Picture 1 (cartoon, rainbow over the protein chains, first blue to last red):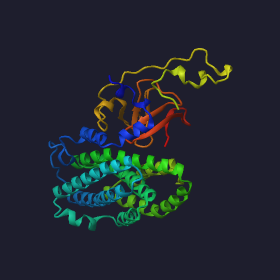
Picture 2: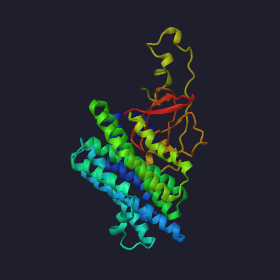
Picture 3: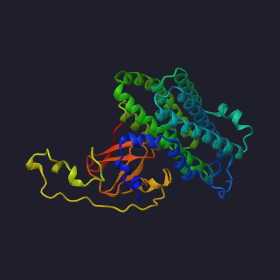
Picture 4: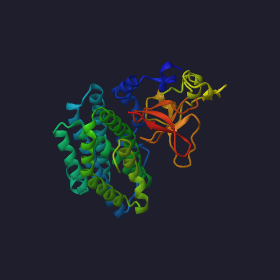
Length: 259
Length: 114
């Protein structure tokens, strides 16, 4: 066994960060679950027959997810220009590739469901609260506001997506479930990057905390509404919804924000 | 912060050099060692690191003494040695550095160190 594998927890933090932010780490990670899965699906998985209502509901959900993925694609690609260090730039480049793939596999699934020209029409079917959230995120990016962009995109949006996809994949048809499972594995990196980068930033920027608290206060109604609309679409019983939102609440609590 | 791969007596708070004599444990129980399976079914990190992680199976999933749940991404982190309070571990799937603490329920938990 090599020293490298023997001592994974013994590493120097800087060396650890450099490796996990690298393109090589990303490439070897995604290889494990994306190889031989064109459009995120094992080719042996048959196309399921869906009832009309189930199909309509899935189309609505995937359309909303496409808005989130397109927002993160635009957001992450824009953030590369003003990322504070080399490692963050490289990581965001890998995130851009992930988000582009997510959008592609979801559009492909919409096409499988019979949606014509899904690329041009998904936004019209998406939930309005997520579109409002996206607009605000892209304003932060346009203003080259690193802390607000990381908070909105990699902490709030990514943990929201992680929770929603995790919940949806439990009940989705096998093809959709496989797509969401692959996306979820990418989201671990994205939200982990957000929480850790912001956590380090807040430790050295005392004024940032209050400002982000105000941004959170502004965005929370949109987050809540997006959760409700998404969970309505997948038919999750109201009693199970607090559990889905817990990941987001735990994340912001660890960063020191009131929930 | 300590490393689970270093010998326990080197960093056990009860036996540390600056501990009061009365606090020192005469013979600390050595840490148990664990052989990590090469394939845990976890495929989200490069192959050479997969043995250090596994999927969490939910509420009924009892963690071994060398395992702890990452609070950020809910993956089980594994070490080749028994984990103790003060140890440091890394969660590669979400890029977090964590320290082992004793949780309210008395179990070992991981706390993120930014």
